[in-house]
Length: 274
Image 1 (tube, helix red, strand yellow):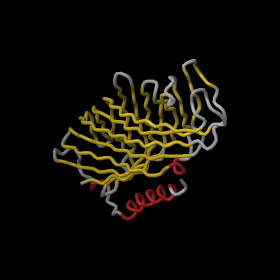
Image 2: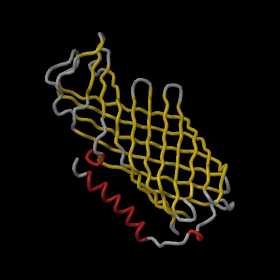
Image 3: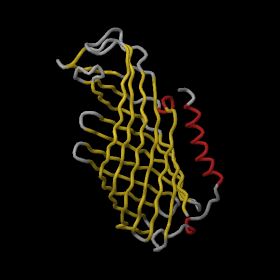
Image 4: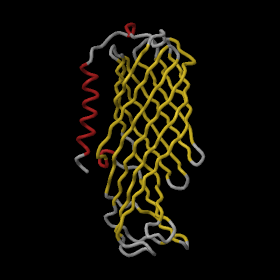
């Protein structure tokens, strides 16, 4: 997994290399996003979250009960196999539509199985040597909205839409002895597809007459058996070609009794406008 470290560094270097080489324009040269014409923006970014939570699997021995794996906050880059992230927006006047896509492939070899339940309840878990885990997550958001406030000092958009969580996970174990009906060594995997309706707000607050601004974002949503929320706050700088941003972002999911997951960490991004 050490090979994942250069991947993250290369993405950071790429983003900020583009920022450093791009021409700088004064604030007065910025386009008016609310002039009634079409305006588009694309934002490639890198999110470095710590992941914490639990995923519960049905007992692979088929004797009832369940198996719970716990992920504790750890070094993202040490666990990262691959990542791809981008956001896009189209705006005309006060109306807008935007999308956001996250792909994460994480894996590790730390002990992950924390509890096992059988038909009779909890079973004591012996020492788990060389346990393994893997998570592949696709998170896609699509929403439309309307700008309810836009002034030189900033703007505020309200929106509604949907978010999909496609989560494929697996866990392996190597106990010092068998656990009830569970074999001493084994693995299990499952895939969850979760759709949620969301509502939220987003926008920017300009810091005086400078090119600096504060971007913000928040949404919340759910369905009959699950709920989700997301929030981000940071700082950005306007260039002639677009914006550079640094934020802290948190995404949380709770799905039945199967998934309780939170990811929080910094975001580095560059927004290109045309």
